[in-house]
Length: 127
Image 1 (tube, rainbow, N blue to C red):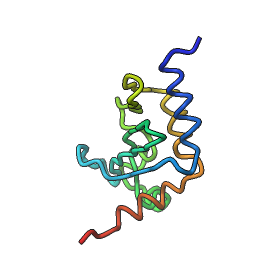
Image 2 (spheres, one colour; image 1 turned 90 degrees about the vertical axis):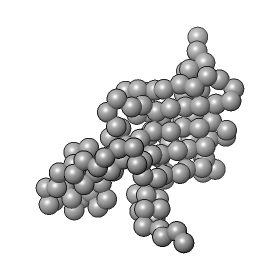
Image 3 (cartoon, one colour; image 1 turned 90 degrees about the horizontal axis):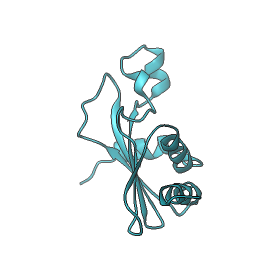
Image 4 (tube, helix red, strand yellow; image 1 turned 45 degrees about the horizontal axis):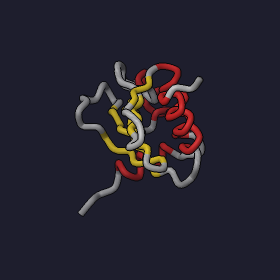
């Protein structure tokens, strides 16, 4: 029998892959950079269900690795101790960890050029 938690996870994984799921990525100022890595917050609005998580990000990752810069080992990983937060008006908020969190992240990021979204918003000057 599926619990409400299982249902909301399946719902998010299915609808996150649709092109109309809204994605917002911005620098999370609550974390200090580690070497060249910074924390980015990923926020998705998937048919009224909000999915949020924090991941480490290194701009120009391949170049940073080639130069042996510190902090590159964190790139593209969830912030340690954090998970994927899923909030809906119809159910209680849930936090997913480990394999479940990875599955949700994979569903959210599939067929999206996340790198371009980050660099586009990171380099935009707001007047």
